[in-house]
Image (cartoon, rainbow, N blue to C red; front, side):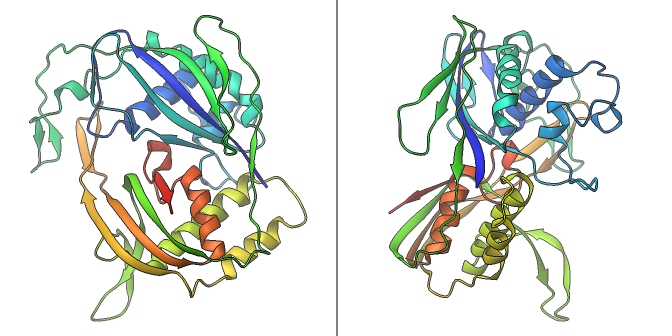
Length: 343
């Protein structure tokens, strides 16, 4: 079983606030900066060299590693497809976050407190200037300096969202400043069912990045990984991406039991020979991410749109339900890969 907590964070804009076309990068930056402000005893050193790295929440969430020291999947996901680009003073906004693993409940008070400190951190000033200032030839930003407004957000409330459909539970409010411990949900996979889902669809609510080694048409040799566009995205790539995402999270954060490795082996071994694509309506979404300190930018594109499927394999249906919570593909901590299932 994989324990997780899904929370919804409600904010109010205290000043005019601006985001880029896709706000996941800004929200992730605020989240990590807020955590470091709350937890770090010495901000001049990196997490990898800190003596408290094994017990601190910051490296656990942002630089999670295997016991052997290898970087691995990070135990949180941002869902921010509903966040707009510009807010006036007094406007409301919200986004969702999923915290994965047994430690999520014990770490939640630190996360709630760090979110409540966002109003002390200015944000959005750099994003305010991006339009028409990108040099596409050199990959840089116009360096002229002006003083745009820097947005400030106040945390109003944090609610827990349950997979069962139960009413949301309030965990933290600005007025009370009291933190209620969350009750973890648990995701399980049923490998005994053989019931097929007759049809369904997947809607990509945020850009999805799938990278694969594509063989050279002349030599047949696979080269470096490249971003897959809608024209190359196939049923096999969808199934493999679902399996990869599920296995990586379960291997690192699922509760230890005798059946865990057997479940992972089952996911690796199963072959979906029933699911069919009825239609595909997808486009490439152009996303630009910028590093304010260096003024450099790069494309972080991903495809959006929808897929209609028929005769969905029972295992694939469960993995799709898993991805609707944990996202699909790369950059899930930036809000990429958010999908929605429908019948």
